[in-house]
Length: 161
Ligand code: MG
Image (cartoon, rainbow, N blue to C red; front, side, top):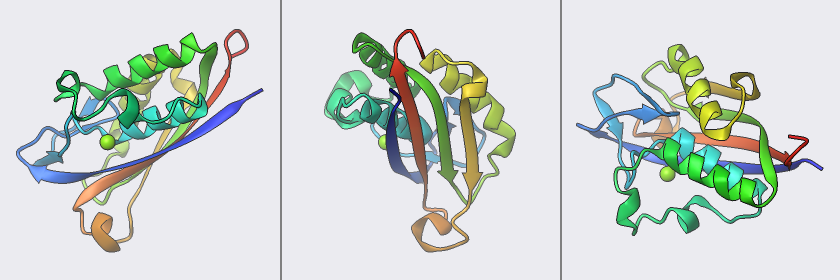
């Protein structure tokens, strides 16, 4: 039986921070603010992964009150979440994600993000899809105040993943 989980996250842009998305550092005048590296795409995928396994959410496993995860590489959180999932006898099947971002243009970095996410999940790059859209200028995301990401992850019993 296949299980599916969804994830959603958003983070605010702030001047003077590194901009890391899907495990890839992107040159930009602003970065995302958060306790960890604020990788909104990795967080959405992690939440979807944990959700599919019935393991709660990212805040339960990687609380922002825990200094271990201060400025953490979110790809390592994703990897740690995958270990939890695998301990439960499940394995990632495939991932689809959408990033909502007005600027900068992210499509040139899509393949690098896929590879980073796939590696953390023990998947082939072809099993991970990352796509991008804008919010058509509407609301906070449309004004470029931050970025949001949504993800779906499927899991299968280990052995037939
Ligand atoms: Mg987050």
